[in-house]
Image (tube, rainbow, N blue to C red; front, side, top):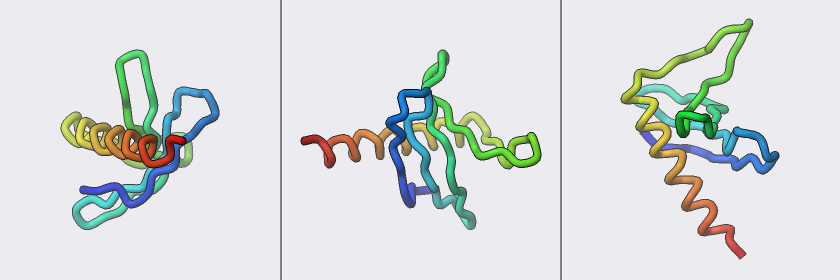
Length: 80
């Protein structure tokens, strides 16, 4: 599992970034890393009023770790 692309959102809302990830045999696009009252969470896009995909707690934790790590690296590279 690795992040293909990450796009920080500076809109001031609870969405910190949108990102694309390569999983075993598939790619997921436009996942949202959000800050919630219970910590960081990853959400997939929705379609027709429902979730396109959901994640097990283990996969969700791995995605959060990857995305937050990429965000920290992005911030370090773009700090001026």
